[in-house]
Length: 104
Image (cartoon, rainbow, N blue to C red; front, top):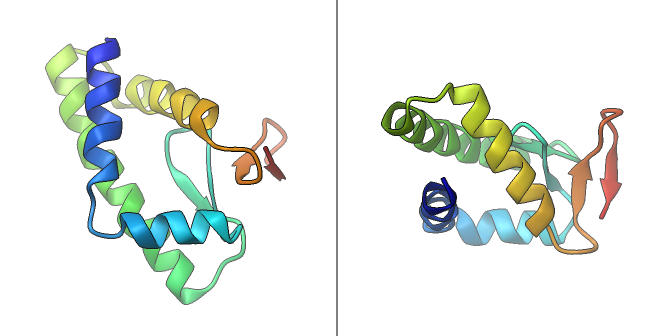
């Protein structure tokens, strides 16, 4: 299971918009959600486009991992979300259990 989580984050880090995603996270525009997706902290057309693209890519990866490991997509996404929240550096936004964006 640890192997596919490493594979997941490796795959996600090589997407075309990675630099834009990182920049948006650093600026506090996008944050990590516990469901394995990203969300718009400060929505705009550009931010929403990045969020939609990244989430579509992540969902594709989650589907492949779920099928390969005989797991539900939701379970894979939750596990990925836990890892993403843990790896989010201080100063970036995460969505807390109350549904509020907070700086880590």
